[in-house]
Amino acid sequence: MSDEKCTHCGHQGLEPGFLSDRQQPTFDVWVEGELERGLLGGPKLMGRPKWIVDAHRCPQCHHLELFARHQL
Ligand SMILES: [Zn+2]
Image (tube, rainbow, N blue to C red; front, top):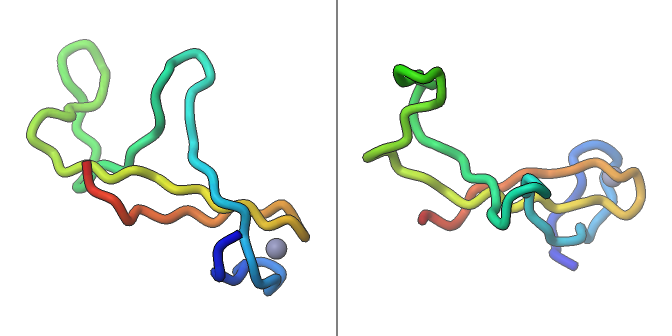
């Protein structure tokens, strides 16, 4: 449990977690700057600062609070 408060219902104490594509053994990141697409349509990621997305879940209302605290 974290000491963060849910912005939806005000409950104190969120469950830590993260966002992941279950098909891939990885986790989601927040990429700094506007989205730019490459030749194949995917996002350009090279040289862009990236941060791990922490997703804390409220046990009361199930709302997710997202945080990007840790840079890769
Ligand atoms: Zn809540």
